[in-house]
Image (cartoon, rainbow, N blue to C red; front, side):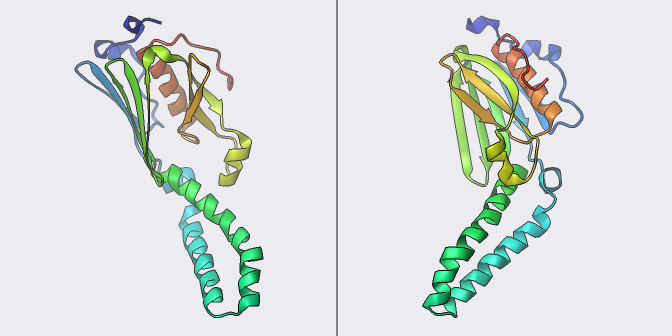
Length: 199
């Protein structure tokens, strides 16, 4: 794939506008293109976060008080029974919180695709020359990983390089937004459309 295939900023008018449900914008600045994905917010991801957060914190504080005011038998009980029990709700809470506050910036600069994601776990950034990308599609999130959030089904954006490496992003975002994003990146990067495995 030659770099001249991909759409330039003066071709942006031909791209689809984001769907009404999308929390995304597309902008151009000279030779560069930027797509911004806004946070979904608590209510759009998991409304139960409003009570899960205080509940998880309360359970961990209760466990800490037990350790401070109990003997060795209670301490052993906490680590054997209570600690694994409290870790699972904490994992649910952290994953849901990450989804709720995550925002992303997708840049196409100097024939390179750069995806920067900001969330609970800090900044994560990936970068590829666009000529090394061969597929951009929407796929189901693996059920094992997604089961921790208590939500199913869910979709994510997947990029595949010419070496067959697959990179997944934006799990659980709006389906129409993900399909718009995949279609837009195909046009900007110059990837021929592939059959949609979720269609």
